[in-house]
Amino acid sequence: MCGIVGYIGKEKNALNILINGLKALEYRGYDSAGIAYFNKNKIITIKEKGKIEKLEKIIDYSIESNIGIAHTRWATCGDATKINAHPHSCGKITIVHNGIIENYDELKEQLQKDNYKLISETDSEIIAVLLNKYYEEYNDIIKAIIKTKQIIKGSYAIAILCADINDKIYAIRKDSPLIVAKNENASFIASDVPAILNYTNKYTILEENEIAILSNKDISFFNNELQPIKKKMLTFKGNSIDAQKGHFKHFMLKEIFEEKDIIEKIIKKYNTIEKLEKKLGFLTKYDNITIIGCGSAYHVGLIAKYLLEEYANIPVNIEIASEFRYKNNFLNKKSLAIFISQSGETADTLASLREVKKDKIDTLGIVNVQESSIAREADKVIYTEAGPEIAVATTKAFIAQLVIMNLITIYMGNKKGKIKIEDLNEILTNFDNLKKQIENILNNSYKEIAKKIYQAQNIFFLGRNIDYGIAMEGSLKLKEISYIHSEAYPAGELKHGTISLIEKNMPVISIVTKEHIFDKTISNIKETKARGSFNIVISNKTVNDCDINILVPNINPILQPILVTIILQLISYETANLKGCDIDKPRNLAKSVTVE
Ligand code: F6R
Image (cartoon, rainbow, N blue to C red; front, side):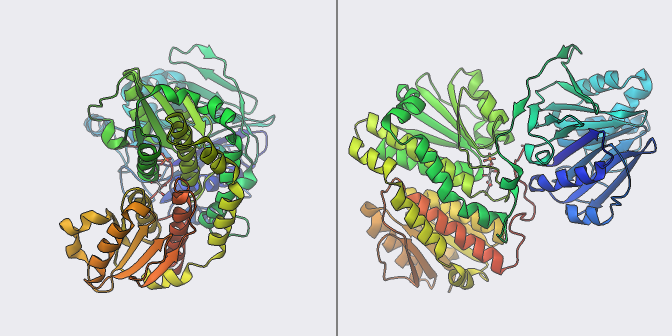
């Protein structure tokens, strides 16, 4: 949610480095972008509405500068306009900001009373105004930063330039991510590691309330009391190639094609009972689980609830993080709270984790991004290791989360005596079969299905039990990238009101994989057919009463959701592609939702 980059170095190619950094962070927001750099001791700001490529067109790369900050925006406060784009300046101060200033209205009123003129509609401009006010008062930038930090409430990662100091960048953060990185010639700040990977893989995480001062030689860190602190540099294990599209038309398609290798990598890490015991042994002490997440991560929780309750006989409660954080929870000493998050920075999931920790409940993070906030703050973490996910709509990280939940299910199921050791070993060692089935799915074309649905205004997804969880994810994927309105419903629930929406030729995509309720779902499908719907049924058995039957290979039911999800991801992709949508950067969205 908004991407920040900052560079100060010996080389004078700041503009190039900043724009490249922004491109690597464009998944975080893309409704406007801007940069500010020093040129002949003056701060020059350039910004533009729209994607970074529009900004790039007006940049003159021959301009030399060795210091600058940059921003790509996901609008929160104020429309997506050029004026509201960052950087924002006031007097000698120029800043970029990711987050939300919650006491904006009250600060704005006060500043306006004091005759300060605000140019934009953003909360971020207030930060520049306050910093400048206190810089004028104290003639000391650090004092101005500390004072401003005391006044602003909310979440922020902020990079600051001061017109009087052309050899330093200042950075602070609270509840929004910011990394600080170094090589022998330069220092960098960024919202996320991909922005700096072309230059260095050595970085550290700026912790809450720390201040970083970057120069081209070194970086110094201070705590709130201005005492210097030493920080350990980390080494990022991935590489920048992982974040490139290769021969694929879109990152989303590339990431779907990476899924089988990711599944193999994860299963290999856990492929014996001893390895499972070592990594998951702690789970046996809990007698109830609550899973918390947002969006697709919540859907993984929903699928996992059905799996764990059926195969491991353990009660599972699932919660949408933005709801969970503001209500009573009834967790106890035998509860495990699992937080699922690709980014590890989702504001609501992180806040829910902090709430649970206050009650001293044990927490487990299932996280993709190394060293992210949820990964660091949860008592235990399992990394999904899906690699950088660039497409805004999650695919490979979802599958990786699902596989981790599959492994947790079989391990706990075995411990509870519900899954025999032979069945557990079969799942862990017979990966070749699963891989072959995934390859078959990837080799199929879903373009013909897409042609049948891409002009629809509304689509229903139906399923019962675990198929309902998968339907929820299929529906979200379709609507977020193709902009077709869709709803996922438990198949048996439709007749309690919603069936009134079924019209002639409305597509209904149903998932039917569970043997014991097969006939029940088929009856619900027939109820929609009787009202004129166009029925696509994804099933592991032949279904006659439908318009299109997509057969999904019959595999161990614990793994079945993986195959169905991949089919749904491909259908969404092809539908959005046919509509000419901007698949990797759907409108109004951003990856890593660091505001509530
Ligand atoms: C949908 C999607 C979102 C995320 C959600 C949580 O394709 O990507 O619904 O799943 O914003 O994000 P993380 O997993 O980063 O917490």
